[in-house]
Length: 201
Length: 201
DNA sequence: TATGGTTTTGGGCAATCGTCCAAGTCGATC
DNA sequence: GATCGACTTGGACGATTGCCCAAAACCATA
Image 1 (cartoon, protein in one colour):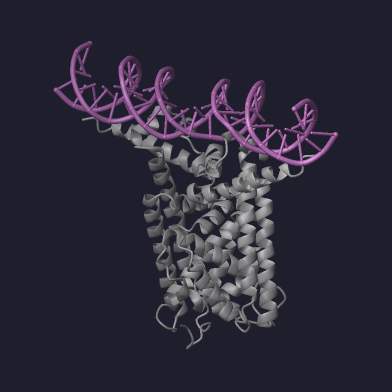
Image 2: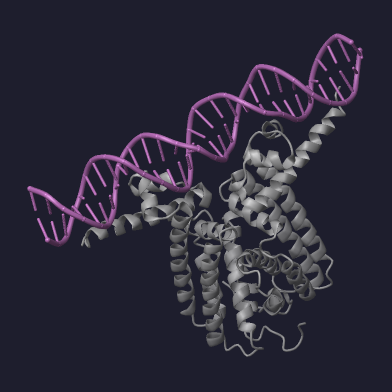
C-alpha cells in the first residue's frame, strides 16, 4: 500500500489547519474563504475539499484544536499556583499579555460566537469550557480549603472563568485596560472565608 | 419645501435599522446582506444605499442603538436596587432570562466581535461599556458605602461587568447553566468589607 | 519499468455579494 | 395642473463565494 505517501497528505492537512487558525484570528470566522486558506497553505484551491468535507468542517477542526491547547495550558499552569489569591493575580498578569488584538484571544472570541450558530462546534466548545471549569474548581477546593457549602468552589470557578472571558472581550475594546488593578475583587471572591454561611434563596 | 415627505424617509430608515438588528441577531454580523435587510424591511434592494453609505454603516448604527438602549436600561434598573448584594442577585435573575440563543444577547456578542475589526464600532462600544462601568461603580460607592482604597469600587464594577459579559457568552454554549447558583462569589466580591486593607502590588 | 491508489492541480459552475444608477413614483408647493 | 425635490424601484455590474471534477502528478509496490 501507499503508506508513506499518506504522510504527504497528513502534512498538508496540518498546513491547512494552521493556515485556517491564523486566518480566523486575522479576518474572523466568516472572513475566511477556501481560496484564502489554500493560498496561505501554499496549495491549490481545490485541495481544501479533498481533506475536509466543507469549509465549516475545516474551521471547526482548526479552532477547537487551538482552543483546547490554550485552555489546557492556562488551567494547567493556574493549577501550579500555591493558593487561589496569588493564583488570580498570576491569571490577571497572564491575561495582560493579550493585547486584545492578539490572534489567540480573537480566535477564542470568534469561536464562542460561531458556536452560537453551529451545534457541532457548540458541543465541542461546551465540553472544553466545562473541563476548564472543573479543573479550576478542583484547584480551588484543593488549594483554598473551601469550607463553605458544597458547590461554592464550583460557583467561584464558574464566575472566574466567565470573568476571564469577559475581560478578554473587553481587552479587545480597550487594550489599555489595567487588569492588575482588578485583583482586589477577584481575590475577595476566591478567598475561602469570603462566603457567608447562611443567606441565599 | 418637502418637509413632511422627509417623514417617509425617516420611517423607512427606522425600518431598515430594525430589520438589520433582527438579522444580525439571527444570522450574525457577516451573515447579513443588503438584500436581506431590504427584503425584511419590505423595501427595494437599492434603498439601503440611499439611507446608508455602506452596509457596515447600517450595521453599526443598528447594533449600537440596540446595545446602548439595553445597557442603559440594565444599569438603570440595577441602580434602583437597594444594596449591592441584592443587586447582583437581581442581576443574575435578569440574565437568567437570556437563553443564550436570545436575539438581544447574540447581538451584543456579535457587536463585541465585529468591534475588534472595525475601529469606528470599537470606539462607540468602548464608550458605551465605559459608561456602564461608571454607572455601576457609582452605584457601588453610593449603596455599598465602599470604604476601601480609592479605585476599589471601580475595580469591582469592572469585574462585575466583565463577568456579566462572560456569563452571557457561556449561556450561549449551555442555556441550562444555573446562574442563580453563582450569587455567592459575586456577593463576596461586592461586599464592602470583602477587601483586605493592605496587600496589592 | 509497469501498476494502482493517493494526492494535487486549476479551472468551471451556479449563486450571492456590495454597490451603483437611470427611470419612475410620491407628495408638497406654486 | 405644473413643477420640483425627496424617495423608491428593480435591474445591471464585476467580484467573490463554496463546491466540484476530470486530468495530471506523485510514490510505493509488484
